[in-house]
Image (cartoon, rainbow, N blue to C red; front, side, top):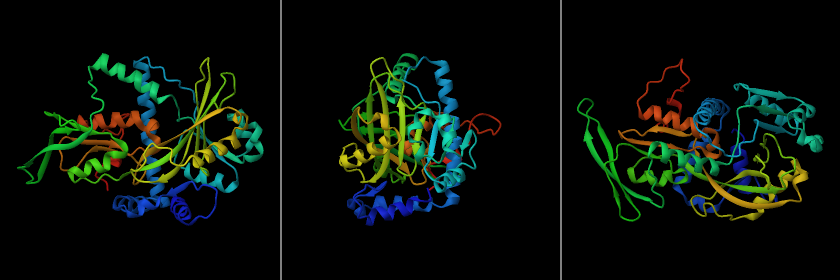
Length: 388
């Protein structure tokens, strides 16, 4: 958002022992990929761009929620779904006003202007009432155990649609043919196959969709296609509780500390609260490696400020890198000058929220389904990978 440039430069020159919400590793200063991406990203940190991009994200997330409901109505999938929505927390008038401003163009929200109103929505925050000023509630958000969902979905795809999965196959290169379009006299490229890490050729490709997140930029360079998606490392804290301990009934968001708190549905054995946050620019080095446990510890401490009753339970730290696009809006669609190369990437930390709508939108693009405004489908143009 519009505060990112300030946070970015503060992180470069901060002498504080307290971790900053954004950190830039020195190695990125030698990366042309980073400079090219951050230039596009900072251009999108204006208030005008923020409102435009937030509108596109809201449209896609609303559509995605509809698509998820359709999937669940047609299939029996269990994935520890628990949340009733999301609640953004404000600790002072300035933060509350900022949340209100950002929410002006969003439907399905409730503005909560007092601590008492916030506690009515989420009673578990009663013990930290003195920290609260207000908040914004959205009924659109949900959560769940993504691993469980993917395992269930994989089973359905194999049994119902005969989908074949080839695991541990890394694409090393593409086999491409080039033709000249007689009508326009323009070059048209077609991916006919790929080479994998075992020198295996996979040929006779009808369409190829790249959904490889953090690695889509370097892979697409092999085709001389620029996809501005950069890995931004975040940290994850898991707090494991006995099954009878009260957990948040909705996702809690603390934008100041870049904190996202989500509880999964308790089992008979345990409860689980998952917290994610912070942003670290380290490039492709150490992706998925917990390089700085102190930053995860900071995330944990901020969580306990909101949920002090969880302070005595077992915890585990992890890290992950989110594939963030240069305008924070995912890239979904066909790449220019290719007739069968598509991407679905750049969802950042909103992968779960946007996944189902992104897949449905891409299916419409591949099937050349014309967008009609009066239907529940959405316009693919704002998500095109050719917009940069």
